[in-house]
Length: 204
Image (spheres, rainbow, N blue to C red):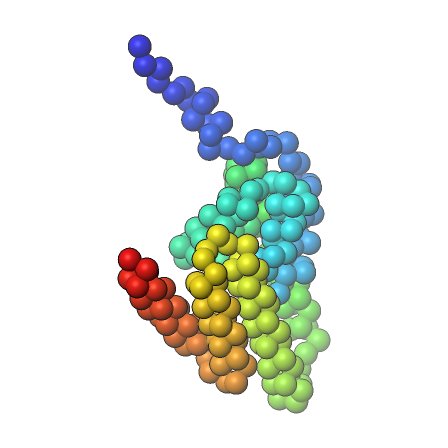
């Protein structure tokens, strides 16, 4: 006689071990802190998210975090908000999702509101372009650092790892030199795919 999985068994597999144990207040505080201290978007904040949600709190595994980040890119919404909403839903269902969304959205919304109140249009033509350029380079640095972190921790052969590092440096250098980041990243992706496929064909 075969035993069919019960509804409770299926639910246990879908829910994390600490489901329901995280209070909404704690969830709000952690997501608010992440929203206030993460710059450059979801991918630039990968290491910070992993440190806070995986290592410090133990709310997610590394694999779960990566899966939620990939899923967030498929939702037609800002990726950081989509990720926060899914984290909240995984821990506390719909109430957790709403709390997480409001908490992660509040800090940047307050920063933008403060800037709109205190900055005049005349000030935007002075040091702002230089500041914007510096911030852009900083974000590129965060993205490169997170890419390097993922490459170092991934289980790939040394050849592919070296290719990834070289391409990462090339993309970052091209973006800093003035090439739009989206074009530099796309070119790096296409070159990486071609090199990895060619290496697999040679190994066969």
